[in-house]
Length: 299
Image (tube, rainbow, N blue to C red):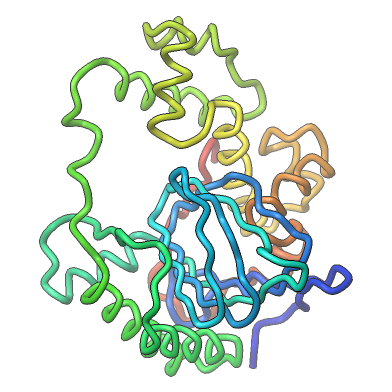
C-alpha cells in the first residue's frame, strides 16, 4: 500500500524520501547510511528523527552531537547542521519533516499561546515518543493513513508537552542595521538564483561593508551567502521536481550549472538524488490542505 517508486540503493546504503499520504505538509525519510555525509544545511520544517541502529553524529550550533539507537533527534526549522556516521557500520533512522504549520496547528489545539514552539534539547531519550514516532513512520510506509496520522499527531503533542519551549521573539527586536540587511540579502539572493549578485553588490545594496554583511549573515543564518544560495536552489529544485519538471530542466531553472551540479548539492541536503526523490513524490489523494504551493525564487 506504500506509494509507488523504489528506494534509492547505493551499495550498502539505502534511502527513501517521500510525502506522507495522510498528513499534508509532512515528508518522510527512511535511510541507512554508511559513507554518506550531509553538507551543512537547514530545513524549512521541523525535523523529528528516530535512530534505529548505529550512531549518527552531526554538527549543531558549534557542538558535535551523537544520537544512538532509540534516541530522538529534534531540530528546529532553519537551524544549520550536518550529518554522518559516527563509526564504520553507519546508522539507520526514520525521520519526519513536518511543516511549521503542522506543528503550530497541533500546538494551538493544545492551547499553546507563545508563538512557534522550539525544542531546546536536540538529542533526547524519551522511549515513549521514540516508540510512537517509529510506529507512525512504519504505518506511513505501509500505507495505513489513519494509524500513521493518529500516531504522528499523538507523538508531536507529547513532544510539545514534554520538550518544547517558547520560541525567541524574533530578530525584529534587535537594534542596528544588521537584521534588516540580512533580510534584504535573503530577498536579493532568492530573486537571482541563476545570476546571484556579488558580495560587493550585496553590501552596496544593504548599506553594510562586505565583511560586516558576511559576518552578520553567517551569524543570522549559520551559513555564508554563497552556501545559503545553494540551499535556496535546492529548495526551488524540490518544488520544481514536485511539479513534474525533469531533473535536467530543473537544474537550469534552479540556477545550477548542470544536472551533475544539482545532483551533488541535492543529495548533500535531501539524502537522495533528484530522480529518486521525484519518483516518490506523486501527489497523495484526498489531501484537503497543502503547504507552500509557490516555488521559492520564481513561479
